[in-house]
Length: 117
Image (tube, rainbow, N blue to C red):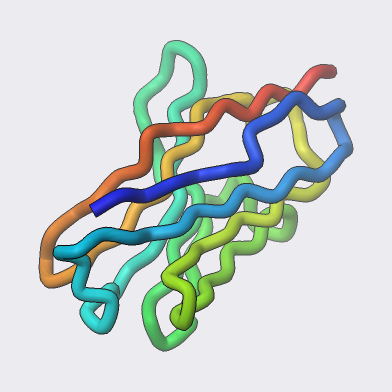
């Protein structure tokens, strides 16, 4: 199973960036993908949940990104995206996509987002 993320980049504070992640693999049970999410690890800090979305569409966000970030999923193409607006320097982090399928956790390789002030 592979999670391929894209959208890495450098952006100025106040700007926007969109991350996308596609899940694939012979042993991936796409019909059993329940949770799709984005996590991040800021420099020198622990990994934290940014936002999650379950199969039915219910979303959850970290308080620090509510109103600025939007998570969405494309069940047909097994993709999860994160639209990030009004970016702040504290959003600088390595972002990881995540899925849970049949109670198994899968992680992407991490993509770096740098927000310059």
